[in-house]
Image: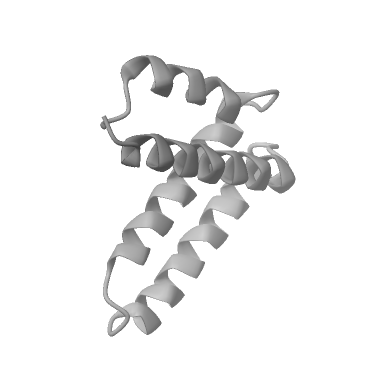
Length: 95
């Protein structure tokens, strides 16, 4: 059963819980890029892994530049993973 808009709107605030908008936005960038890289086959993974690491370093540097603690970004990334896991679970429930 696909996740409903109501369920999605209930998950979203948990990600932003006591975190700055910038921390959540940077976490979304890292989370989405990680998901896209994970979707590629393992044959391409070695080269993509280095590119991903560089991207995360760029995000971390930018976070520092704008005064967002990296710990806040990491906490938001973990919250996004939890929300994604919950959404996936809800999506797999039978009708």
